Image 1 (cartoon, rainbow, N blue to C red):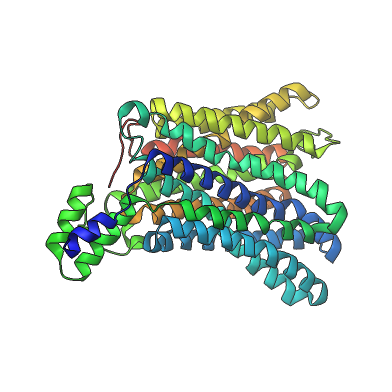
Image 2 (image 1 turned 90 degrees about the horizontal axis):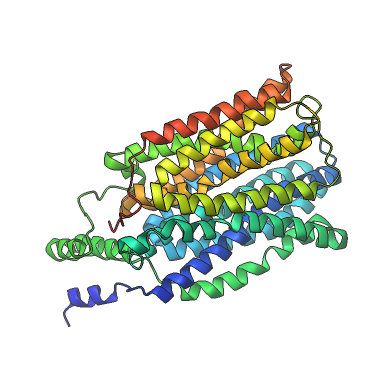
Length: 455
C-alpha cells in the first residue's frame, strides 16, 4: 500500500453505533458543563454574603466574568478547527472541571487576600467559559457525524430533533445544579458544590476514548498535510472524493469573515447577540422582574418553583423547535419562535398585576419560544459554514451571546437607574431585541432540512 492509500485508509469511517455514542457523550458533556456554568450564578449571592460584597460589587464581578467567558468561547473555535472536534470536547470538559476546582481555591484566596483573590476568581471563572463553549463544539461535531449516517432524506429529517435532545442538557444541568446546592451546601458550603463538579469530568474523559473524529475534519486535515508536503494532486483527489473544497486555505478566523461564511457570521451572530438581551432579561433576571414592585410584583416563596417552570419549559421548547426545524427549516423555525416570544413577553408585561395565572402562562410561553429555538440555531450554525471554519464560525456566534448578556446588563442597569420601571426596562431591552433577532435571522441563507452538508 502506497503512502497516499494508507492516508486514505486512516480516515475514520463512522457507523450508526459511533454516532449514538457521540450523541450520548455530547449530551453528558454539555449537561456537566451547564452544571458548573449555572452553579456560579446560583451561588454568587452566597459568595457575596461570605466576603461582604455589596450588590454592585457582586454584579460587577459577574460582568467581568461574562466578558472573560465571551473571550474564551471566542478563542475555542479556531483551536477546534486546528486540533479536531474530539480533542475540542475533551479540552472543554477538562477545562470546565479544573475551573470548578479552582473556583473553590479562588474563593478561599478572596477570604485571605481580597483584591488578588477577586482577580483570580474572575480569571478562573473566565476559563470556565470552556464549558459554555461546549455547545458550539457539540453542534459542529454532531452536524458532521450526522451527515455520514443520517444522509438519506427520510433520516435527515430527524437530525434536528436528535440534536435538540443533546441541547436539553441545559435544563437538566440547571436542575442538577439546584439539587446539588440543596444537598451539598448545608454540608460543606459553596466550596463543596464546586469541588463535586470535578468528578463528572473523570467519567467524561474515559467516555471520550470511544469518540471517533469527524470524517469531514479528518479528510480536510489529511488533505492539508498532503498539500504542505507538495503532493497537491493527491490532496485534491482525496478532498474531491469527500466533497470538500480546498480552495480556501486561509486561517479559519479569517475565513469566517470572507466569502459565504461572512453572511452567516454577521447575520446569525447579530441575531444571537440580540436574543441574549432577552435571555438576560427574562431568564437570568426573570425572578427580579417578576418579584419587583415596578415589575409584576409577584411573591415567590419557593424559588425552586420558578426554576422548575422555566427549565421544564426550556426542555419542551428544545424538543418542539428541534422537531419543527426538521420540517420547515431551522432558519424559519428560529424566526417564528423569537417573534412569538416577543409577543408573549409583551403580553405578560401588559397583564394586570395580580393576574398570577395569566402572568405565569405568558412567562412560560415566552421562555418556550425564546429558549427553544437555540436547539435549532446551534445546529443551523453547522449547516451555515464549511468544515474549514465551522467550529470558528460557531464559536464567534456562541461568544456573541455573552457579549449580548454584558450589553443587556449595562442597558437594564442604566434604565432602572434612570427611573424607568422594571416593566419598561424589560420591554425596551428585552422584548424589542427579541423581536429584532427574529427578523434579522431571516437574512441568513436558508438551508433545506433535507440537505446534508458534507463539505
